[in-house]
Length: 290
Image (cartoon, rainbow, N blue to C red; front, side, top):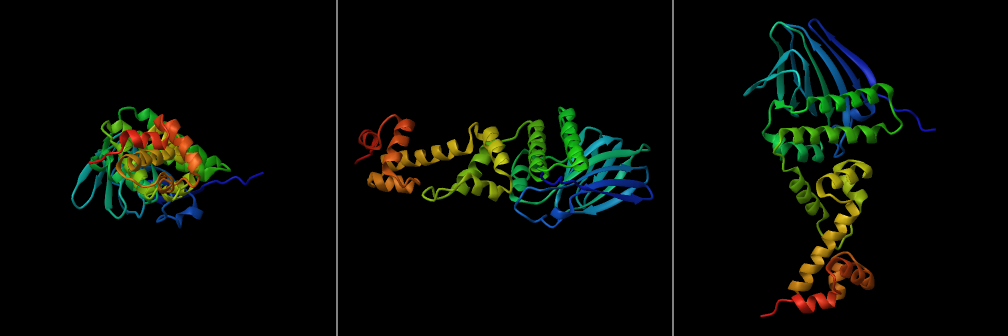
């Protein structure tokens, strides 16, 4: 039977605040990894007069639960209310103080600064968002509760489950902002990563780049591109084959190799299913000549 993996509980107690943190010490060393790691889950209570200054090397996704919390940097000041979210960015110094005369409660998770997190946060709708006004905060609270339950109870597949939850959380936030173009950006990144189609990259290799499991990678493709990864990669290869057949005089066997097919007969069958014609017939009908 596989070992049960659990987060360790730590209490940070200060005169006017308490922070309960569940963290995975074995993964705190991977904060700069390309992988998507959910390293910590926390629940904090601040009483009026509390002032906490933090500067993290990871992303910290804050969820207001009760009362008001002011978050201030050298340039900006924001107010986090119940049902709001705020992303503390790596390398930025934040001072957090209680707003008003009521205690403040919040939840937070820490995610390492890898390329997938940068894709999801830095380049889309969330890049222009400070305090995020949630349309359906109950869905976000439900995700935080799942993280809490896994951190406390543990699971033999904890790494995979936590990565999936971190990804789901950021996507849910982007959806609730309401003007996210993450689907087109995801496809752009995948096309760039695939690069030279003559080198048949596997789903495992793409998953390794993003730092997620193949299960999470499959979920990402289905959500953004509406198809499983292998089907999408086949489509990319056959799109390139159409272009080469219509715009070059390369021999068909060379076109096949350029698109990652070592077997010319297999390429011809795949292409006919995709385009409705054999490569030769398609070229005869579409090749541009002066």
